[in-house]
Amino acid sequence: MLDVQNIRQDFPILNRTVNGKPLIYFDNAATSQTPQQVIDVIVDYYSNYNANIHRGVHSLSQEATDAYEQSRLKIQNHFNAKHSHEIIYTAGTTHGINLVANGFSSLLKKGDEVIVSALEHHSNIVPWQMLCERTGASLKVIPMNDHGELILSEYEALLNDNTKLVFVNHISNALGTINPIEKIIEKAHAVGAAVLVDGAQSCPHIKPDVQALDVDFYVCSAHKMCGPTGVGMLYGKEAWLNKLPPYQGGGEMIAEVSFEKTTYAGLPHKFEAGTPNICGGIAFGAALDYMNSISFDAIANYENELLDYGTSELLKIEGLKIYGTAKEKTSVISFNVGNIHPYDIGTILDKMGIAVRTGHHCAQPIMDFYKIPGTVRASFMFYNTKEEIDTFITALKKAVMMLS
Image (cartoon, rainbow, N blue to C red):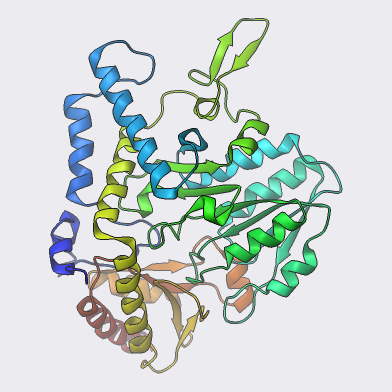
């Protein structure tokens, strides 16, 4: 059982007020808050050993390099990658997806097919559209049903010998649906296709085991896991990463350079050109330490309680409709109330100190499916409480009365 009140003391921002009201932060699917333990690691880096890594012989550089590479080992251990060099530091989920999409530009040809799901964030749609434009490959879409679940029979019908890549999120950012990625990966591998899983929304709530999943690529961002912005992780199977060409040229990703020819460094440096977000990488490891100290099992159980409680309380409001009612989902509730525009609800809630997300959530195809402009999205994290949900419900009712 989580000691939530004690955990909340780790997050300084939860003590502030917004518009004269205590902050209630329900926009965790966009970015999570950062505990003092991670903030301290960031301050310590810039206060005590700020230096560039890998190339320096002086003490500060060696200290920074050791901390950065120790963090890579923490990420490897957390995701259970076979090798540390299968962990590539990125600027975030979107960067990781684009790195893979760029690499496959040289591996695909006209007649090849790639598959995405109807539940994807724009960052897991647009790079593949661009890839298809470059290569002549065609893009297929796994459809969804009214509950926000992928129709697996339709997915199986799309698979064939021309399928080269499948891209799917682990959890939908707009609906909270947990996709059956084990089955999706197994079916794709049966026809020889590689699979990339967007784990941006799953990693704050689930501890993925990339070897058990047998996934080819897995991407996530630190800022949704109590870490800093501007840093993330691409896991790739060693064999696949060796097949892909470098994404960017520059320092660190080279073995030897002459004006006649350049040879590239081995993994992981082949994909890590230039000075990285050193402090961000170190803090990413600290964020994983923090979340693991709480336990992902405990986090999942508690957040499911919040989801069930929030769902039941919201459904008591007349005219409220929840989008995304999958049997398997996590702590995201997207909803509208009657014909009230979600932006108007979000604006009034902000006046009451409550942060929610409004709009299409970078998932316009989902909104088009439901024929709506967007939703109000409340997303929970393990530092949220049922009392906050009660306050949110009261404020929402006031907002609906004002706007009706």
